[in-house]
Image 1: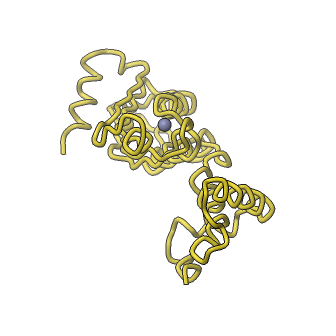
Image 2: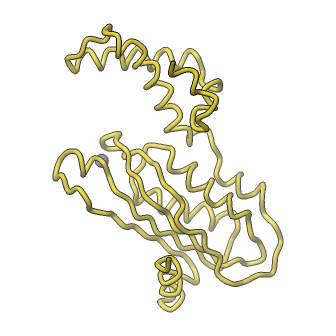
Length: 205
Ligand code: ZN
């Protein structure tokens, strides 16, 4: 039943790329984990769960196979535009490296070109490539900033991420609605006026 959906959910199109051996190994470990947690791994509903989780985890952490700097280099265009370029509300689905639980939110990225621009969708792909790893929100923010700075060499880069962490919401302090905001800036964005313009632009609906 569930297999028949595979072709339709864009998220699962990559299933064929999963290494069979790695999937089996991860699956065996999950089988053991489920038993250690007190469940009966051979009851009907759980029969295929270890394998599903193995594939799902590989999908959620596919960023290790991706090279974000190369993604930008492949789509760099010479252009004299020197105003702020902003891509806002990029969806983030990442995994906290301390609890291996999701953190979910939005990234806003801005840069001021210095001779080169990139495809706007590439910025979103860079965010995704770093998000699909075991992460902390602070490092994710800086890695996106560094990647753009190192490849496009713009006059400045700004990255703001707002996210909700399931490890905070489901366990520990159980702060259900708290949002964590992180930001990192280079170059022109270190000037207060430029940074404020960026913040104003990403805050407008
Ligand atoms: Zn956590």
